Length: 446
Image 1 (cartoon, rainbow, N blue to C red):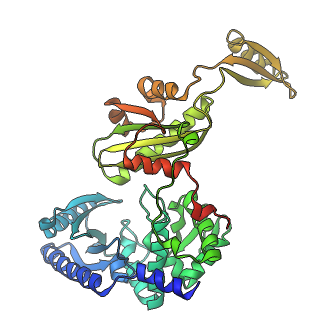
Image 2: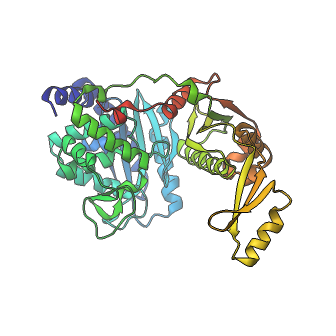
Image 3: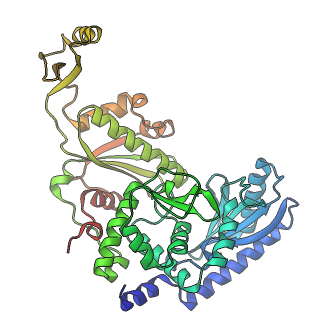
């Protein structure tokens, strides 16, 4: 990696003194408020800073301060949630706090552009995990001890690299590389450049770190404080393969453009006309819940369309403006042939072939056996137009559509199916562009 690129990338990724002072001031103020509320509760053992702030790996453009409230391990789950929320709301009451959900609820607020999270966890020994947050304080201790100043800088550079190129974030909407995964990769491999070199030559299911277990995921990243945990399990195949391609190109080109926001690509009209968008409104809920639902809906509808004979090339799902969502589908063509061939069993299977003939003879325009001796029936399709099919599926057969129950009420209040050529909101337009254009950072050949 060229020295000037290294220096400029660090200038982008590392906070300056003014930013540090602002964040430190907010952190100390909030810590004091949380501590005061925690001291009122007998079930609380201690309060700690955690996350990227505690490990000094936070980046300027997205700042979160995590404060972990440790409960006695004898605390019931009910009290753990109830008291955890009370401490969060009472300490952050001046800052319009709200509840977010992981495995357990936690309280979040935004203070002058800085996210503050008050997260309950149990005071347990390593390996005796009771909640999803229990590992976090061990992560903080481990990384604070193991990371050098240069490694912390390189973690920040890696985070910015992944953010700019759309692969950062553990949330369901993104299914990318989390902040902790960035720390673990640099801890194992030593530097930002070494991470890219490793990823550029990554094999499918390759393990980074050591574990007594075998895992099945495109990339396996072992949590250094829990060797039975694969941090790569939640990362999508698209993000893994994108990281591989972009790493290869960056190492070849060494350009600062990989650290700069890209402008939206022009949407190709030929592909836009073969794109269907289902727009609808939903009752407000947490990002993780709505994204879990719309991703399942998108995947199920894709399967239904494929079963009906439509070739879906790509799909996506987005939530935006707090109560709006869209499911996007790029098809090979919106219309298909009137005719379809149904393949039956081979003629040597007496009972099955007789049954197939009985069921399909009246519907068939033509019947024959193919070169493998299997029965063939030429029939008329129910639907030749994907938009008409989708409309009928959602309006009249939503129970068979695979759309999650939690979304069905939202769909029943109204939905609209439009083409990629139609006027869309800025958020949907951005998603259409992403769906229909090639990512030059991943696929450039120069």
